[in-house]
Length: 303
Image 1 (cartoon, rainbow, N blue to C red):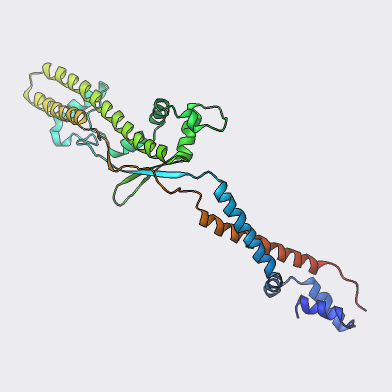
Image 2: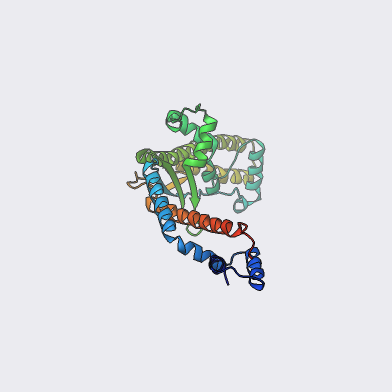
């Protein structure tokens, strides 16, 4: 016997004795799942109406919200020769020369992909790109005081996203913004600035290393030492030549970013579906709560 049968019996002839005791105990028990589903079924039109209202409101909101576009450039980090700083293949004398170079503040090795990706996402490079392209007024149109620190944080959290495919090693740099052309320009521009920065850095380091190695070679007459120095010197010369002759020095562009024609958000269909589901859940919860409260209302004692 469920609560609805209890109510029906109360509205008929008043029970006495054992029947009154049974009804009192039923009032004290929790509603079963079947009773709750029955209550929802009795008000199915209310639930359907709430679902429709939720879907309509979500759809209207999806059309009101400013759309955002995601432009993605696909890149492959370039592993320069000699990356990793190992000198084992050049012999013990070359390793010794490399150690002396390190003590002199010179770095004799190529750039690895980890360094290139770190530079791509670094605060220094982002600040430089924002300043050179005067992006502060564009990033802060809501009246907030534009500062480089705030712009960098906003860029990192809401604009730029870098993901790496562990299987292929490919890296995707995605820029999300309200203007599709700007999104594509920023994505390609950040990659270009990273390559320019890494290339200029490599040229400067190689030039300093070459000068140091040539100086050390002039200070010794030991053939083995000279051979070790010239081996490293040759590699630094090659490194400088490669940097000067290659635009995509650290990051090779596989597929440049283009202005997207469709926004990445909001996804109107998904918003409408979620709005309908939320409306349905809210109405079902309200129906169950109301039914439970009505059930718990004290009733006059039965005679």
